[in-house]
Image 1 (cartoon, rainbow, N blue to C red):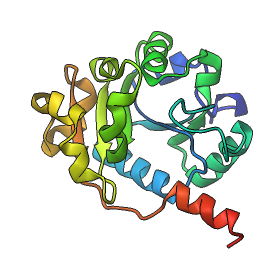
Image 2 (image 1 turned 180 degrees about the vertical axis):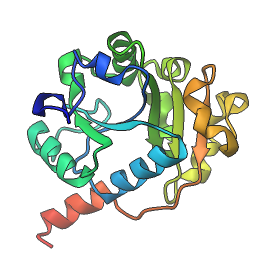
Image 3 (image 1 turned 180 degrees about the horizontal axis):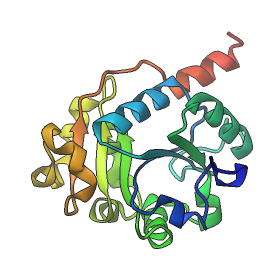
Length: 209
């Protein structure tokens, strides 16, 4: 059993994750919801992951700070929603001093040199990832697993990122070994869809429902 300090990954916990395969689900988690947990559990099983990290961003560079709950509030709610021993919630980007995913992954790989990482994201993010800073470095550094999302999947697969890396796409039958593939390597997972939406939850809370 880990101590309280070790329940989430931090700058000095690299040895605890040596030899493990870790999926990273990054985002604002404003708020965390059952959809995040749904795809995390699917990823653990389908990709053969040892852990999934919910990496709660201090502030997404592509999102407005207006209506953003505080980082401590988002972390607390994420821990309550995750409720699983292999899903770990962290704000490690704060300690790393990074804002952009490409920089975060580069520093994580230096801090966790014996850990295999898989970047987890929804089809909506595959569509917009060409807007991210140094986005091709993400594909070059870690394996990427993309999850189907209602209304986004078709557009994502015809988008710039999917087309650029079309020959590096791994078939569903090979996803258990995705983390060990030579990069770039990515897969599109036909996971059962979940209706939860952070935007809808915020709107409902604002309306008092």
